[in-house]
Image 1 (cartoon, rainbow, N blue to C red):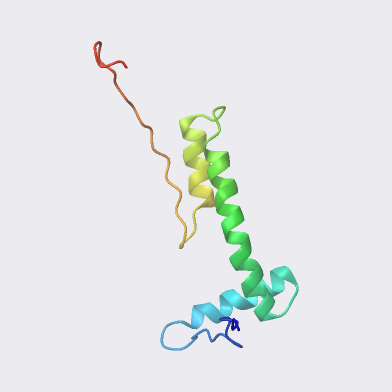
Image 2 (image 1 turned 180 degrees about the horizontal axis):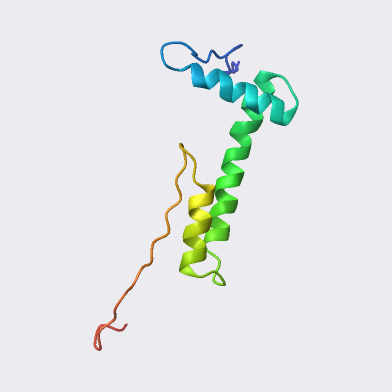
Amino acid sequence: MVRNQTPGSVRIRTDEGNEWRYDAIEKAATFYDCNRSNAVAFACEDVDKLVRAARHVLERDDLTREQRREIAETLSTRAVTFEVETAVSVTKKGDEA
């Protein structure tokens, strides 16, 4: 018999310097118009999709480097930072495959 590994509840500490977590959860509940538990779950699911979408936008060929940097700065948060790097490669004659 396989037992479910999902706990019946999960506690989020909001004391000892973590008071901001409660405020963040309240904001998410207001944004999603739902209870705090669902808000946390929705936000966790959405962040992965939002980060993938942001990467996709930043990788577009039709954007200038400055546009990419501005978008990266706009989308960055205290927990997720997007950086735009320019890779330059040099192939010397004779190194070609």
